[in-house]
Image 1 (cartoon, rainbow, N blue to C red):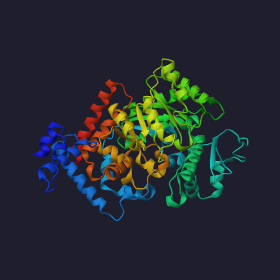
Image 2 (spheres, helix red, strand yellow; image 1 turned 180 degrees about the horizontal axis):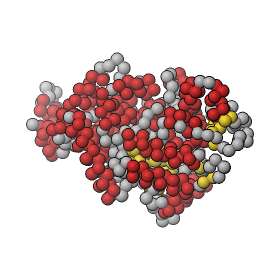
Image 3 (cartoon, rainbow, N blue to C red; image 1 turned 30 degrees about the vertical axis):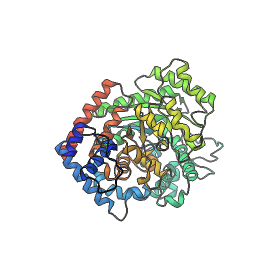
Image 4 (tube, helix red, strand yellow; image 1 turned 60 degrees about the vertical axis):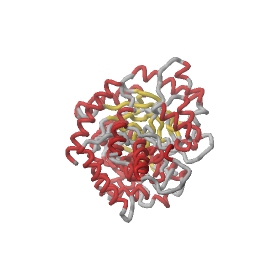
Length: 502
């Protein structure tokens, strides 16, 4: 009875008046009311489930309880060790079928699985490879053997090298190792954050020669949208630095060309798959740049947004926070839109650090002072109560990327992720995948699993999943009419999902 009353009112009477001086047996009714009030504050706590949803919710809880009793609880171990377990999980299989709304935090250089890059892109004619002095690789498409350069002294035609080696499968697997962080022994291979970030950055550089080849880029973008659509994702906001793109004859295309290609590919994809809503770009600049360079990047982003208002939605600073410039260091550059009277929304990475009290740790505060629309990662936000309150009051959502946070060694056991605090408070939040290709994931299902089973624990229920999916549309950059359309499309998919699995 109390449960139905609480849910009908959506809030309960504050329970401070229950406290008294005398210690004794607590009133069971008061205890139940306290627990119900607390449950209402968590993510999804105010979502009223239909009878069919309640049935699926009960099934999910049973599955989660069983999974928690297993010898290995996947969220408690490194994702690379847990991935095979997760793939066999009945919960994961349900999440793959669940309509998840939009992916709002994905980087363009890690959008597509590395198996496609190797099996497709590197098998194209005129693809050259070079092995660098620091145990990495470079790729380049060229009509003739490329000239040596500072990082590559000897280029080989990949088709010839693959035939000479005689073990294409083994060779391809070795190439994939250069393009991903995935390994069977992550604990020894990546003993600390410095080591894993070094490999992380090398993988981006290695993939660049493939992705920025114009013919590959077109297919790459289409494939990336396809991998999302197959995972029941219906919208994408992509972080991209819009690197210059090259043709086989050496012709270089600037950023406007890349935006036009992105627009064309997205239009073609939505025509092929009408249930996919579309894709937009958040232009990204590196934290390694100086103030004058960031000023130039901001001015360029302002112009590109004017030229492509339906595609370019904002600006972000990317790269490792712990070693890059802080938002406060770049305040002069980041103030330019306001100074110029331009509307350039910010979607800042902030708080992707486990250091406390230093200048980097203040990025979450500065992101809010610059009126960021969302906070990328926000791992440190739980340690900033005032910033946390500000972001909640302003409806600034955290873009939670659980797999990324674990692989990049911010947290080892996802049950200890600070986002558990945010979820218990019902903080605005969306789930995303960050760099899926480098982590061996696709779509959003792996990250939803880690958030739902590991970070949320038994408190997270179907209402949690429903709110997180809706949040991905609510906190997107879509104009309100398109948000209404997106929600109607999602609701239809959700009802079909519930009908199929309840």
